[in-house]
Each structure stands twice: as structure tokens, then as C-alpha cells.
Image (tube, rainbow, N blue to C red):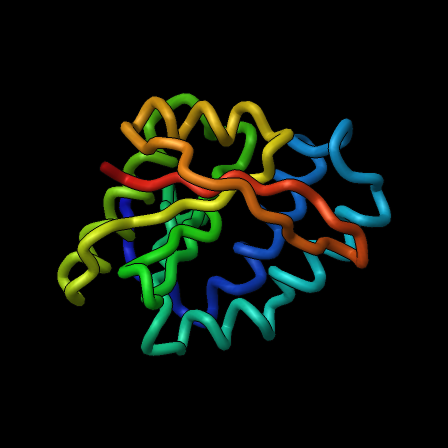
Amino acid sequence: MTIREAATDDAEAITAIARESWSHDYPDILSRDTAEQGVEEWYAPETISTEIDSDDAVVPVAERDDEVVGFAHAVEDETGGTVLRVYVAPDHRGDGIGSDLLDYARQRLVDRGAGRLRAMVLAENEPGNEFYRELGFELRERNETRIGGETYRENVYLDL
């Protein structure tokens, strides 16, 4: 497996992984329509391509056998750095790909001067919350986020 910076050619694969992950992970959290709207809003190929080209974003992908099987999306911000997303295709989970993607994004943000790293995850996404807790992140606050016009609770973790 290889972790590398995403290229705009990876945008379609990233969108597909997001769609597959949301369908797999969120059926009891988001309606099918809300999940589809969220994927289109956050992960449309044009949106992802813009993030890949942004100087403030870090978008690594995990590649296995020439196939993109996971991605992370993190940004530099006033807090230092924020991990917005880490997704691994359901068939490729359990091999440490998510933590490798997070480590890659963390190192790139540290290289840019970020001190602390925040991570966001839907409050009802227990596997996502567990992922950050297992990696030493601590729940620090609760916010709200909008997906497809609906409001959802979101947990904010801090890397200590």
C-alpha cells in the first residue's frame, strides 16, 4: 500500500469512496437522500479537485494495487490543523489504512507549522468516534454541521 498526495485525477475515486462509505456507515444516521446530497455537496469531483489544488488543504490517498482505497482531507486553519475526513472503502478496512492516512495528514500539517490537530466526526458515527479515541484524540467540544439541509451533531476531538 502507498500513501501519497492526491492528484486531480483521483477526484472521481475519492467521490466513489465517499459515496460507498456514507452508504455503508450512515444508513441509521442519514436518510438516503441526505447522504446523497452530502456526498454531492462535500465530495463532488469539482469540489475535491479544488481542495487538492488548495494551498491550505492536505488530501492524501491510500493506493493498493493501483486502486485508490482511501483518503483523508485536512486543512490548515486558525487552530493549527483540522482533519475533516478520513474514509477507507469498506472492503479495505481493518488494515491500518485510516491511521496511515491520518498520520500522513498530521505530518504534513506539522511540517507546515501546525501545533495541535483537531478532528471532526458525526456524533452518531460510533466507529468514527472510536477511531479517533483509539489514536489518542480527546473529545473537546460538540458542534453542529449541516448535511443536505439538515442539522446533525458533530464531535470535535483534539490530538493531545
